[in-house]
Length: 469
Image (cartoon, rainbow, N blue to C red; front, side):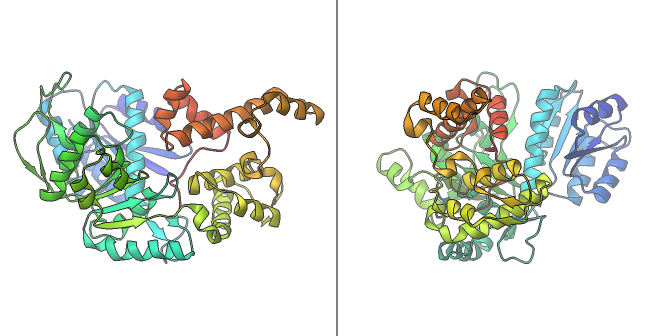
């Protein structure tokens, strides 16, 4: 269970945040003074801290420095009722995760805390190789004994400690983020912050501002200076996922950063020097993008000095057995199930399937099967239809045929069954089209991202934990 610490001398604020966030998966503790909060950080090792700027015994910034002295990777969200731009800038420059104003907008706070918890998990929960001694329920493991995965392990071992830029290549769902976390875990910077940014998830202007920051008045709505992640994460590691989606302007700034560790904020002329290790990843064919003029050749050469190539699951089928055992054990624990054995037919089906969604699709299929399993034996009946190769809309193009088949079987919940089939195929095809990007998928589907995630969870397609591959 994750822990959120609230340090605020206003009891109503602490109470409201506690009521808002307390759940089976998140414990909320609170402190009314800076010194009490600092002591709790040392004792309880919370995953995220919400820290008021004005406290009765110490300033929030002083308390922040003492908290970060205890744990430099701990995400700290700062709150204040006194909106002084200088304080916000100084807090972010020192490495605060976010700076929010009171009265708190709880929708915004939920979003920020959720992202901070993810960052905390990435930094704290090690991503380790399958045979590492640290591999346990408290670690995310990269699974695979095939020759292709042995090469991946060797490459990680060679480059993790080099403090050099690394490019991770692989299809969607192969586990690129987990490899990035392993590179961080085995690096010399593993005591400093780690942050993942999806370059495809943000519009060009927002991505450039997120990475490099901006000066007040740089563009409409820039009412104060913003400190970018490259400046904020000085000494740490940043993972740029989907770097193939970066625009030309952002590519140019990223190239300079790689060459000189220098940049300017948007709208500024002051050169800022930083020290950040970059790990990048993409499922795109970067050499082809370079040929088409869509990606800078000089940036590609800078990024690809050290490359980790992740094989698709269809090219390492010998790993499917161990992956099956791993995910069955994982979801037995997570879902409170007790699957003791797996029928040989299930293993045959899993090994024959092409797995276009790779480890992400495989993990979702096992999760779906465990959710729907009754008894302690995993049988083919519990697997998703996509694994069984049964005719569906995508294969037959005839919804009438499916309805007729259900009628012939004497089914009495035809509307629900057909709706489930439609949802599964539509969502999988749209997500495949956008390489798993949920915001883009929601826009194409004409639904909210929250609705999409709810449907994915209902269908057993949701990715609740970082993928393993």
